[in-house]
Image 1 (cartoon, one colour):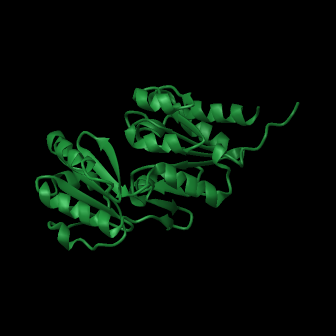
Image 2 (cartoon, one colour; image 1 turned 180 degrees about the vertical axis):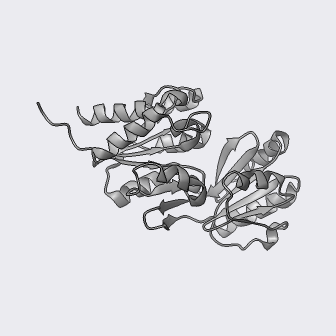
Length: 276
């Protein structure tokens, strides 16, 4: 019987909440076993998230994937948990930071969260910002006036508030003419901006370049609109069964609902694809 091919020339990136984890934020056992098998076959598996390294660490270290850096801050960075260092970072430009600062002043009732390379800054009243950092007890500073936030190494800026206010923030940025930004809707209560042409997909492709993996063997799975650009960028895109139809339309493979082990579904598909 012919041996199965190695998976060492394949890279798979997975979103965390609603993709790797189920809707209760728990890791399905089926996913854990599938990842262990994929890595044992030489495959490169990693996580791609809007989280910063500190927030992602507990999710990353429970899996046997330390040899593959993670996509952090929605693609603004690649973090090597084995070396505990950022190996790639694409900071927002001066123009991007200025536009974020102007918007913060225009919408004073909205919390503005600056996710920088090494720390998180919360500006504004801070109620939404405090919720953002409290779950994972993230290192942060509360600086009421955004003008006082150091203007360096901003990975992304999150505008967080009630849905009505966030819809106005979103409209404000979408009406701009060619800003030096990437715009991203992450929920009805938040809107994010990053450097131009920066998203999970660009970081996955940068990681593939570092690992020497062909773009046709880059794979990703997600469940929401903040994964859309990543799915459009990689060679083999997939989404969970509960994902919006827009994600299903750009996906080569549609897995089961995240509660039932969507990542395991996708890894089985990749292995069958690799062994053809």
